Length: 335
Image (cartoon, rainbow, N blue to C red; front, side, top):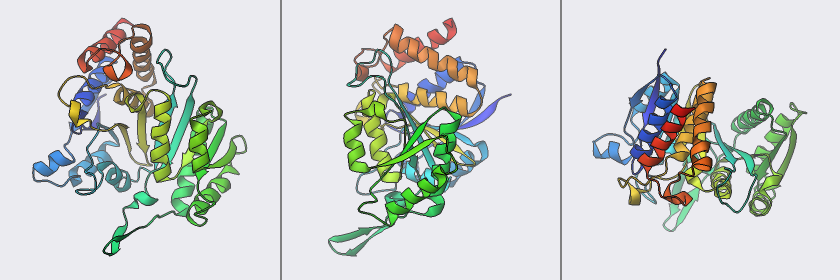
């Protein structure tokens, strides 16, 4: 029976990597109907809001969305579509698995980390104003409800996926009230999961340790801004944002996305790497209970990357978007 998925192709290279990902999803036999919508600058150019209400309605109705990258204006213009989606749909947990790909040359081997980021508040609450000319105030919002909720998510995920340790990352030595509340909520939740080891690290020490000994960590739990920065750092340990999948999860909806930017400088040239969004699609298939299809796609991706060594330019290869995609399709069909 066909299921409808909201599709946000995005802009820049978004439509290219999204079309490639839809192609491989269909190749594994997933019967989805795609409900496509335009957001961001393209929506504004069409005389609409950057994030039209019908997009929110679509995701609420379909429960699942596959999203390409969307450009966020720097220093002006509309608020990040990513942030707006997460807040409007209460997608409170950002899930970013970080796993070394065999045969892909990076500074580290054997990295196997999961980053969980609180997704709805902190400094990304968007509450800021000019006090007087030359002085701007931005409010960092940390609540017991959100901190407890994301901590529960992390421990449940750890238990369900065989993870043994969660490290909360904070700056509670300086921000004693806000980060202190986040840390205390984590510690309280940890008491209900005695089978999962729980510890914590200060954010600056964590960043240093990650670029020295990333293999010593299992799962990381961070508030919004720290999680944004550290999850990208972790992606750099295994080959960059072009290989890293991501999901934004709530009680009633889920958005699976490429975590990299829209790369307008290479848009339309057919050289974009669709791997990150394809790996996000693997997460989406698992989320929907299509476990066999998720495994088939994951196996095909590894076969193409590792055995056939078909890689896009950012990974040291020569393949374009279409060539890489068709290699994955052939691997699926041959399995």
